[in-house]
Image (tube, rainbow, N blue to C red; front, side, top):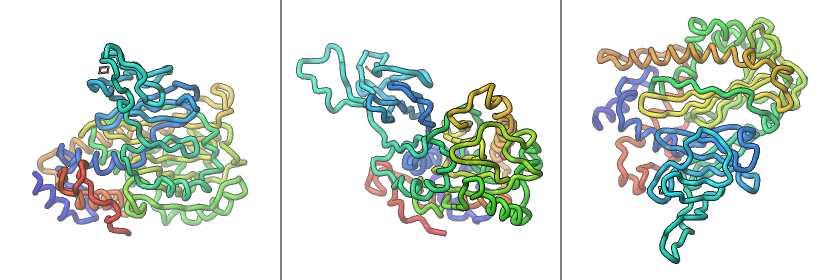
Length: 422
Ligand code: FES
Ligand SMILES: [Fe+2]
C-alpha cells in the first residue's frame, strides 16, 4: 500500500478528483492527522462559552480530547484530557464547570492550570512537579479560541495581522454564541471539506441558499454587483479588504486565512429565509451593504460573516470515516433571544443547508468506496476545492511514506517551509 499511495500521489493530475485509496487508507489518515491537524491552528470555540473561572468544554479530534478551561487568572488553558498517572480520561462531560480537575480513576487532582495538586497514598517525598497535564498552545483572536498541539507551531501572528482590520467591525470579541450544533458526517474529512469549498453543487442541492447568495452563480456573473457592495462597504462601517491566503498561498501549513466578499442576490440583506435582518447589527457595523463575507480561519474552519450574525463551520476528523461538522451561530452579545432574534429563524438557512450537505457527502463517500470509481475532471466552479486538493497532495507527496525516523523526529515531519508556492 505504501508504494501504491506514493504512485497515486505522484500521478495525480492536478485537475481531477482524488483516487479512492486516499479516502480509505488508515495509514494515509494517520499521516494527515500528524502532518496537518497536529500542527495547525485549530479553532475550537468562542470565549463566551467559558465566561467564569472553571468553565470548560471538550474539544475532540482524531481520538484526542482537550479540556479548554477558563483559568483562575481569567485566561484560557487547553489541557490534554489524559491523566498523568495511568492515562485515564479525566473529564467525560462535553462542557461544565469545575474548581479542579479530578481523575475519576484514582483521584489524582489537577488545578485549572494543569498542575498536579494531589495524589493519594504515594510515597513520601513524591515529586508532583513534573506530572502536570500536557498544556497546548492557545491563542484568542477576536473572541475566537484557537489551539495547536505542536510544541513549535507556525506563527499565529500572520492570521492576526491579516485579519485584524477586516474583521474588527464585526466585533466578535463582543459577540456570544446563540446556538451551536454538531452535524456528524459519515465520511472522510476531505470529502466534507471538498464539498464546503465549492458551490458547483449549490444550485441543485441548496435552493434556500442559492436564491440569495452570489456564490451560487459563476463569479463572472456577479462582478458588477460585487463592485457595488465594495463601494457601499465603508458607508456601513465595513472595510474594502479582500484576502485570500488559503492552502498553498498560506505559506505554511496551519495558518490559512481568508476574508473574501461576495454579493447577496435579489435584495437580500442577510442569510435569512426572506432576506430580511435576523438580529441586531454586529460590532460597529451601521447597516447592510448587500454583501456577505467568506471567512477562512486555519485549514478546516470556515465562516460566513453577515452584518447581523456570523456562522462558523468547524470540521474535525473523528476517525478515518467520520467527521464532525460543528456550526456556531454568533450574535451581538447584547441581543436577547425571543426579543431581538428568533433562534429557529437565525439557524434555519445553515441548518437546512448542512443537512443537505451531509446527505451529499455521505453519498459521495459511498461512491468513492466503489472498486470501480475513477476520479473525474473538476469544473471551474470547483476552483477552491482544486486548490485544497493541490495543497493536500503537495503535503502528502512531501511527507509520504511517513516514518518516525525519516525526518529525525518523532512525528516524522519534514520541515514545513518546503511546500511549493503558488
Ligand atoms: S489514571 Fe488518573 S488517577 Fe489513576
Ligand atoms: Fe453545500
